[in-house]
Image (cartoon, rainbow, N blue to C red; front, side, top):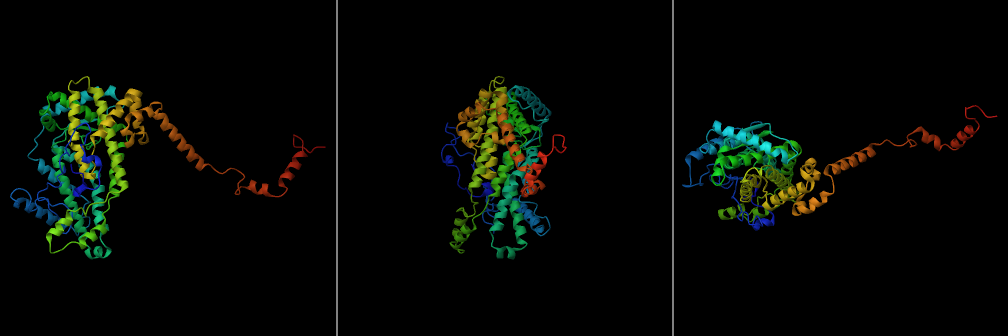
Length: 509
């Protein structure tokens, strides 16, 4: 599996990757290579003068025959449009050319999809309605989707593009910015308007990468949440009938049963995200935290540049492939990826547990389909492909199974209400260490009420805030009483006057 964001070479990753991805034997391979198609773009070359930036679609030298005149013409046309707008205000349009991405993905899918029939749309609507009824007793969260739709792969690309923009922008922005920041000041001044053109070339390159990847991904996804969270409009549950039909061909189960099982997973995702309002932002925040730390070690580039012989193309190619242009992974980035992986595992584990409880006894093949989806993830499903390509995160099946075990144990010990109450606040969620010991986390939680813990925490924070805002007591240096108390004999004079009066205030005899 490719685990390198936007075509950069691999940085230090989890050592588990060198072993089988699953200790139980699942997915012993590395999964699909280069899932977003970064290395499979026609040509797969480099932009001249921009080391490490993937080739344009149709670059000469790619594919059988080595050269496609039609694709070359398209590439030159796009390049001409880009250059013509390089000097115009706002011509860059951001770090990724999403118009190009959508266009490439749609063209890639044009020959693979067809219009949906009324029967397919009805089957999707009926499956989602039944799934919602079956999930009601399995979770405290009510239905989260207010609309059910059937999508073609092209619909998926169109409806999910705003989400991909939020996911990809932080990483692409930092990758592009790192190059400019790494240039010496004199080079930046000399480049002038060329920097804007380079930025547009980067946006075009990233757009072509994303478009190729989305085109491949759209042909595989089964539901609107298969990447781990809803990628379409809020509260819109979506199934892709064409992909589900192809998926069903490899299973020994009725098509209606497969449709209902996948509808239950889609509905469960929407229940979670609709009633845990901080969850989506938490996910996107982890991606942004990762992107914020992207830097390129320019000193390493300078050192290796001294070793390049301009007259020897082989030395240049060797330097390009040595990883000299890779972003450096910082401890903060590794922590962000750990948070992201843990949160995705907890989401998947909760959905897996809730769906098993909701439909397990009603669908005879639920257990087999559950195992099939686990193998699909282990070998590199859409969620694994997406996050591997954007931030270089490899989702490990062991984490997903541990999360499912944790939610199951919580439900057995504390009931459905106590299990779902853990989502009340991000501070109550298990962390990566807890996934290594699900039973230990459950036993620690067994004697405590998560809501009571949260209320206790809020009360402590409120008390601390009130203490900080509390006004100073009378008698401070700023109040009149303090000055009076400091005057010599003032207290004695007041006491003598009080002793000389009776209770009514009249002078004593």
